Length: 307
Image (cartoon, rainbow, N blue to C red; front, side):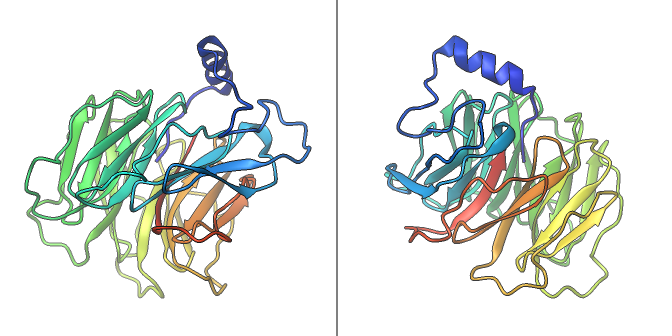
């Protein structure tokens, strides 16, 4: 779940806005020279905790969201606020960043939406009674809207997010656990915990794990940058590729905590996985920008986003 943009555009926007990159929440220089420097992670209570000491090359970075709305930032991903100090009606389950990378949305299981930075509010399901809980969200390529999906496959659209169909009211073998839009924003994929794939709009079916016995359930997916393929990730860190390049996995390792999400790098030539303890696993050209794997969290991490 990611917004795509040109890094120079983002840098120029930051300079124009007067953002100080060496402030308390982020002390990585815009153009990293490879020297060591602290990376700050916003803890669930909204405070800053040092969680890594390695700068992130090539302007990379990522955000985590915890169930209490706490947001953790690494590399060039800026902290724009969190819900960590608030009492929420329902737990947070997803995070999506804006195309500029200067803001993000958080989504809760009741469809509540929380905006930070330049992320605009386009509506929510927070005041409605849902048939099933929200399990994931995704932003449109323009950043002018977003989708949410429930475990029964119901899809909710806001802003310029188009509705292209859903699995709501239809029989599913297993619940939906994730979604990914195509690069055009004119379609999306839904994935179930058994690896079943459902396509809508211009999303093209490239295969699934729905008919295979899995060691562990699927928990998320991302589409390739071209939009004609996708990756699925399981709780044991196993990666399943469909018209996408395999860059590695944790499927053969014993993990401390289960994996809950994945996100592609800006180039699309790598990906990060995140576990509930905030442990990060990087593959391909994905640099390790830090993690909370060695910290005690108030609540578990549930989602990851990157620019």
